Length: 295
Image (cartoon, rainbow, N blue to C red):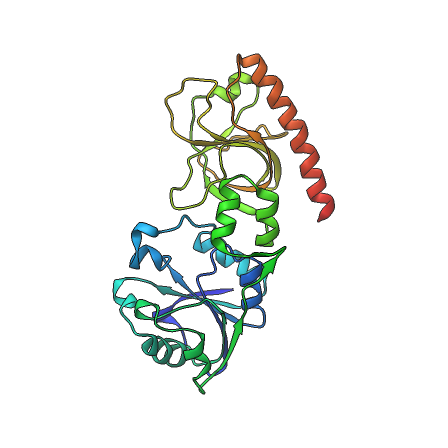
């Protein structure tokens, strides 16, 4: 898939463009994207510019968003570098200069709640009234009576409800980060871990233990502050990669979250913690096997 920033895009007279922020590329987004050969999105998230105090923690980085779009068969991702100057453009300028002028759109696909232009004055009605392209407006998707939205899925991730979050995403929730050196506490317990520091701009699952895949390998992952030990360290993501004995320091590790095993808690002694970790590892093996069988 081609990824291009707006100033460098080549104009085409027949682009079918889906427009939106598409954080998470969830099931609702996929309906908007279906049938489009190009996706137009914004980086950073517009809220971080127009109302930074309300900036959401994101489900996906731009790189992850591009991966998901490529898996859907999208041929081109066009990124608008969103800044204070761009935020001042009127809705009419967005249509004239971007959709028509820069992209040559013949079809524009949006969700019904999509707003654009200075002070969000542009909406689906403005697009539908423009005869220069066809506008397709998709109603908000509901699953089991709940509207599928990025904000709802963020809440599910924060509360550790990974199975439901993954169902609404249409893919497994992922985090990536560089493996950093810790205090080797896991190795002392017999379960050496790869430690990642959470990215403050991204949603992180709530404190607890999770069954995951780490670069495709089964992993039991703990997120939290390790209350059994007085470490003085902040929040950490610790991944015990099953049946792996290599060196991961300095490598970029991808974690796919399958299910939450339990909450974070303090144990009376290291032996009790070790017994619980053994149970966590056994359950992780079961869940990863179930995931593999489902395909």
